[in-house]
Length: 217
Image (cartoon, rainbow, N blue to C red; front, side, top):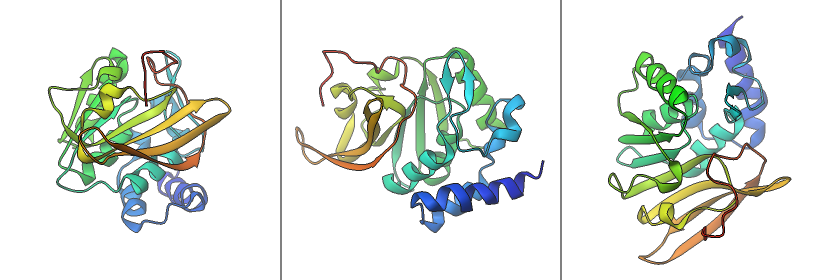
């Protein structure tokens, strides 16, 4: 398979039509090799517009969603980022190329180990993969400039919003099928948050982020 041609087609036929026009994001997608982060048996499908199965009922986000997050979050070189739901490690790698430090939490031990190895092979040294419960975040490493949920949630736990710096932002796809909305919540003050809806999509629910009466947004 010609991976470079497939990568070019992914960018031009999937990513651009989804309103991802930031040249720095498009250039990054050409540099970080998505095929090196997916399971070996799925390398030929790394550029398809689907959620690739990772085992244990888990799936990777479609490339267009990953690219759209990179554009909308507008991460900066000095920032510290927390990702919830490492999966393959590809999204963490994209973030790692753009920011100072990334912490990414993965509940599944096998996925966490595979992501660490993929990141190591790719030479991404500023990403730390933590095996654990993403619903709790990483309060000992916070506060964070950016938090991203790489999957969907019924609602966002307040404990994650509380780990944002004032001026920070959290990206999440919130809701239930068939109506989920990607949004960014900005922390505008010590106890003030403002939410901006971006686009509609449907992606797999992150483990632990099902409906719970204790969650608030």
